[in-house]
Length: 345
Image (cartoon, rainbow, N blue to C red):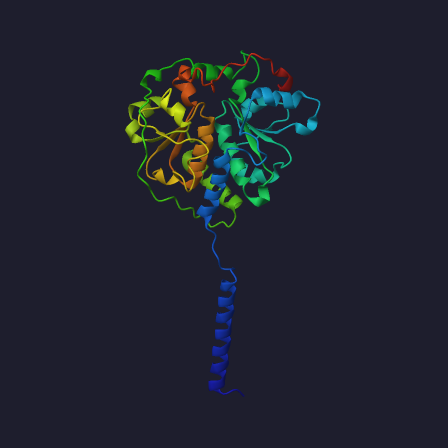
């Protein structure tokens, strides 16, 4: 029979051995935690640093290009279409082959999306679908999703059909006025104050799962919408906002920008090592571009990081349409008949 002293020694020895085994496991990395912020920042740097899909495509596709792909004799190049409009509008008519989806369904659906086809995201005017395209192209930076690549249908269903189409008037009404064209300024502003970068902590271990968790949080906390339509408030109360002009410097200066806006050129700014630390975490950030579609992609990314970012819907098209004369990126009602690719009940 073991003495009490020997019994205690054996218990102590066993306890110490388990402790040392645990230390060995930690040394081997099994107890390492994932730097979620670094993963998400690396994905954003990769995508917005090139602003190309993983297939090397531009993130917007025109109706002319899409129509050509859907009507040629090569069915292997047909994109996979996701329609983010309301279910009732989808059922009233959509592009042939499109699948209806909501933004909230996207995190689960992304596991079933094809990696051998271009995914085209569609909405009414190109704003909401741009958020979806950004999510897909960010998650494509995860090795397990590397084949995914998405493009937003430029101007959405407002680009489809004929001038009497049901959604065209949305954009026509938006560009009908140059209400703020005389309020643009050409004086440059430089953001000099720096801030801490956001910290992401979802408890997930992969980029894809982190993005899914952040996307769900983004939709839950922001009512599914990060597009701002109150242009007048941005001009009148511009000091309330940190305003990003997401243009090249030359166009920031001519034709000009919203008073007080800072120029953050696409591809070279809003990177973890370039200018991202100039964005405040505690102030509403307004991002705008030519049409509101590129800015919608960037605003979605900033929201995923934790910034209070908003995309100015319709961009400069919506408040100074003719300031873009000679530059381009202007909406024009379609003159071609695209009924060959449309399904109607």
